[in-house]
Length: 312
Image 1: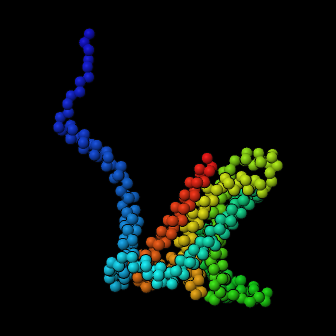
Image 2: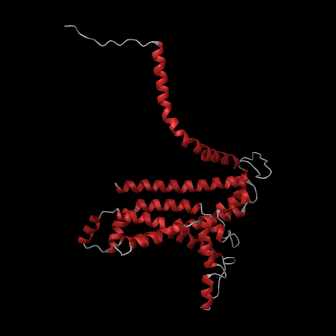
Image 3: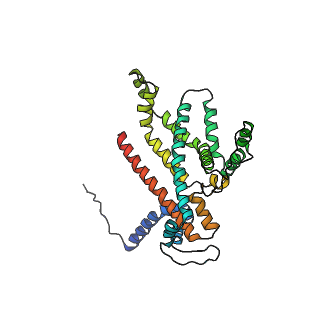
């Protein structure tokens, strides 16, 4: 009986070359499909980012078009010789310290209320979330109508015989109004995120706790709050980033006043780059803001990993 053996014939030079071409085509093809997305990303994000980093080391003037390399002089001048920048940095950190805790606490309270089986729950959710989709300009016009010297609040304070106030002279009122606008405008998204986290907690935990005699406060303190910890860290991160980059409500309602008490870093960046045409210093402010946001985000991500380990 004849035995058949597989014999591998040596490939000729043409076959080897065709296989190499096929392998090269197979390796390159996936990257070709990425080009429609990669090219706009590189042109519209990576290139401006790197170019802005280079400009922060120059004295580039937007109108004159002159540019000289000055090293770290823009950064040194901002921290040592620019009181407006230091005031803007202090105001930004103040708004972060005020806005983030207030938004988190109010959103958590609203989410707890909406988690109860109430009639018209969907309507209440829509009411709280709707302000998030209103533009910054419309929000500013609405609150100007309410808080201007001739606005709604001062009108009714006058009816009650109470002295009216002005956003143009009272720094405390201006800061409080900016915080109020931010909370009203941005609390809806945080509420939805908290509500999703609360509804994701299994009911068995609460049933077991009630069997052991736990009340509402004990359930919230020892079940809801610990299990919402990753969600809370996420909400704090997005609020930190949003507050560091706040601009619309400040620029449109108070223009940074009175006396610069509400001017934030992003507004000062805009004024430096496009009002004084100093694009070098403007780019330096942008990179300082970027490193601030990056530092806080990395700290929160580190904290998030610790909480995950705790959950395990």
